[in-house]
Amino acid sequence: MNDITIRNVQILDGLGGQSFAGEVGIQDGRITEVGSARPGKKEVDGKGQYLAPGFIDTHSHDDGAFFRHPGMEFKLAQGVTTVVAGNCGFSAVPIDPSVDPSRASGGILAGLEGSFTDLEGYFEAVLDKKPGINNMMLVGHNTVRTLVMGMAKRAPDARELGMMKSHVSKTLEQGACGFSTGLIYRPGRWSDTEEVIALASAANEFGALYTTHMRNEGDHLIEAVDEALRIGRESEVHLHISHHKSAGPANWGKVGDSLAKIDAALAAGQPVTLDVYPYTAGSGRMIEYFNLDNISRELAEVIRIASCPAYREYEGRMLKDIAAQQQVDICDLTLTILTAPKGDRTICIQFIIDEQDIATNLAHKDMMVGSDGIPDLKGKPHPRLFGTFPRILAKYVREDGILSLPEAVRRMTSLSAQVFGIEGRGQIEEGYWADLVLFDAATVKDLATYDEPKTEPAGISLVVINGNIGLQDGQHQHAGSGKMLRFKNSAYGE
Ligand code: ZN
Ligand code: CU
Image (tube, rainbow, N blue to C red; front, side):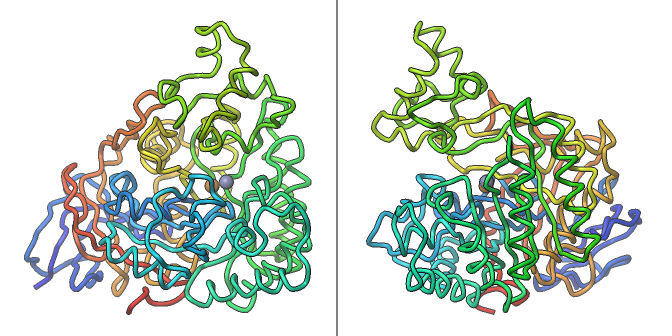
């Protein structure tokens, strides 16, 4: 007898082929039958719905969220069963817990608690919280650099570079899937290409990834892509470009040129993949986007405040509306916010992306989906935190027809699992882990908006994580069955 048998569904196996009618059996956490299945202690009738592998969020900042919100409801409700954390150069580990653990990330990783210093310690601490979903980690450049060099605005000396490299290697050895950078952020922006090549090379011996929030995503996007491709080539690691975009109206359309460069690299045999989030606004720490000596009015005008510890009343509002109401200049307002106590912890949302560029991105066969959600639930976060995966299915598959349903599912499951070394997941196949999502393709929809961002989606009726039901009929089951995954290996502790 199975633990769970799901009947009467259209199965999308995650590999991109057409769906087929059938049943799926689950036992001891794994998929044991595909096609026809024995009776289950629990039977689920999925009539009229699709059963797919659980979605993989390749771009998360959930390192700290696993402590603050261990149920990870905002991801689980989207059908996400695994996240990749440690992105944009900011990772929970390695750290010195005697120093403010969120120092490098300035709040993006808020929530970290415990006395761990390395990846295994982090895994233990998260598992103690009974996480709702699985987590795969990257080791971040900004984190490692801060640990070794603080906020030094210079190149490392040989000893410092060696120390950084050994931190990266040790974290990869403990199961991280790659090395991530955020080269627009501090302190990553103070590193030259050679430093990044030297550190990314540590991923080489593990066959792990180099993932990057590139040095520039606007006026110098193409040069930044060239740098990323060079780092991938010279360190001989798989390059994964995070949240591919061209920011600012003057640059809209450039993603086509950028993808042409990537296609040329792929044709020459270089391994490259990417991810994108399906929204026309980005989000991040506001202080990283402004030069305080010369505030950009153009940027300030398209900014909305997500979280602002200094002025909670600004959360959910556009800067231009606040400035108009207070009859102050928008640049002065920006400066006031950023220089207030905890002003550097302000998270903003910036409307800088063209809808057509999202379609261009999603049309690319090596484009995965990553939410880039910043899990600060106190304010009004970017709706991508709660809506990314259903939005792909609702808007880009059903409404706009940019990609087919089986192809969208492939990009959100097997492609991500294969590239990020997520073993035994991302497909509906006998022997694979039972990470599954059951949804209605006609009604699945993101409901999170900029005004009401903390809203779970509709149309997802069942989510299974490691053979346990995490969500059923809109109700969270608090199964706490998530695992800490290791690159191309069994989960931590197995
Ligand atoms: Zn980023
Ligand atoms: Cu990010």
